[in-house]
Length: 162
Image 1 (tube, one colour):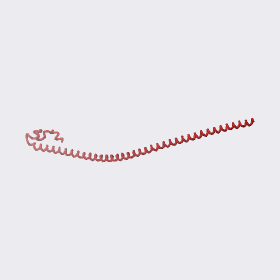
Image 2 (cartoon, rainbow, N blue to C red; image 1 turned 60 degrees about the horizontal axis):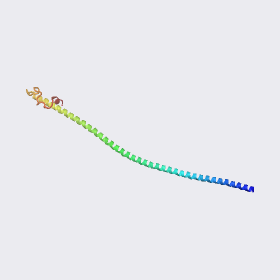
Image 3 (cartoon, rainbow, N blue to C red; image 1 turned 135 degrees about the horizontal axis):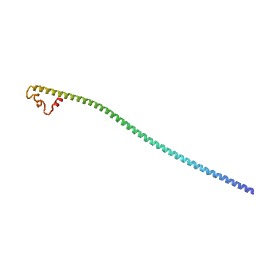
């Protein structure tokens, strides 16, 4: 009996060991499943985070493209405006040069007319003196300050110079 009792206690111990190993295996399997589920969830969150980041980047890309397009449109407009202003500026420069040339020509004409007028005035004064020089008392050489020969409000040098 002793042997049957010993055999029975040995099998109980084996059962306990095998049951303990099974429990341990079950615990390990449970932990492994939990770890797998946790890893899957973590991978899912990582994929979602990555997708959200990608969506954000795509949104930024769209905004940047739209901004670039607006900038290019403004640049085209400003370039066209610049070209128009540059063309108008060239026309104005040409007009300025033409008007400056005309003004110079007109100033030359005025100088010529003034010189000619002064020359004629001088010749008239000389002729007037020649005509009146034979008269005694009223002649130029007798009374050079006579108002008949020179206007009262104009100096003698002024008349000769102009």
